[in-house]
Image (cartoon, rainbow, N blue to C red):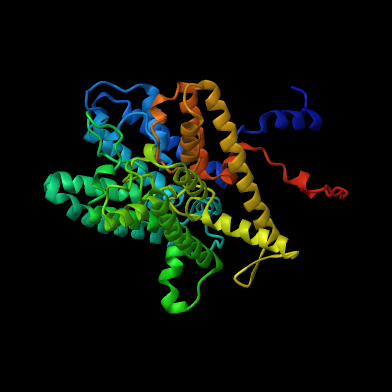
Length: 469
């Protein structure tokens, strides 16, 4: 045999050293999070598709199983079938587990693996946890993950105990315990699932329990704790030691308090004489129901008044509250209170002709301001686009109902005026996309599906101004 030339040897090596389809760089933090939810939704769909997941013993349609799984994993709560009367105990248990895993998200699920394997997070895992929890610092992420697990289990256990006390007199210990566990987990995770429905009374939410003060006060507390964000909770608990709070914590707490109590007053004012909602209730019950309905639309998804009968001002307020949502890094969805705080601060700076955005004496980086504005624009465009498409597929349904469902899906709220079961298959697919986008957040979703080329962004182009306004 003749001696092989160096050139032919190099060509042979080039043929062997082919580029794999999925490089390590492919698995960015955003794609890891998206993959986690995709796998979770797939597993949930298969489990709910089994015959014994339904009360009738017949397999549900694939779309019903997929929709319910996506709604549970995204902690939304919109449903095409009534949870209480359609799904068996096994089906309800699957939904509950999906809600728990979806609520904890990628960060805490990573911690569960770490705790079991006694291993540390890699850089990619840390970045994924950072995106999932909403924390900026990369330090002590393992500790934060364990804190999330402990806080979640403790709050859900206490919530289940109080809800058990609220229902034991009506249902007995066994059913009250299951109802307490189910609704404690779903409400803390800001998922709008309930099991109060019956074959004769489907999709009732908790309308029949407005006079149960234990239930009506416990559930809003669970929603608020789950919706302000784990980083904020940790910061509040550390206040006794540090005597200082971060800008994020101050913004979330103050804005949340204004929205909750201001919203309760507005709802009471617009509904106190409505005979279909607050009108027949005594004053203490009106106050509790108004407070409940002020908390729940910001991604809680449970209601104690009939939303189909609310007045137009209340309807508009609920749309705004659903759009805003809860805190970053929480189980809540929506635009996020943090984002709203940055946008409002940016608007104030513009009105005062300032070049920097300041919140509580701290300058917010321009990249954060731009990101907040981009998220707001993305949510607005997404809601308009999906609403437009659904009106094409379901032009027989009123725009009011469709808009309510779309914002509820995008903000992973779960409250409904009853349109979701009436939607066609293409419209339900659009709602699934909206729920998943709302759960992951627009930034993570866009980064996960885009092909980025960092070298392109190093090029600087000439400036040219454009008139605004």
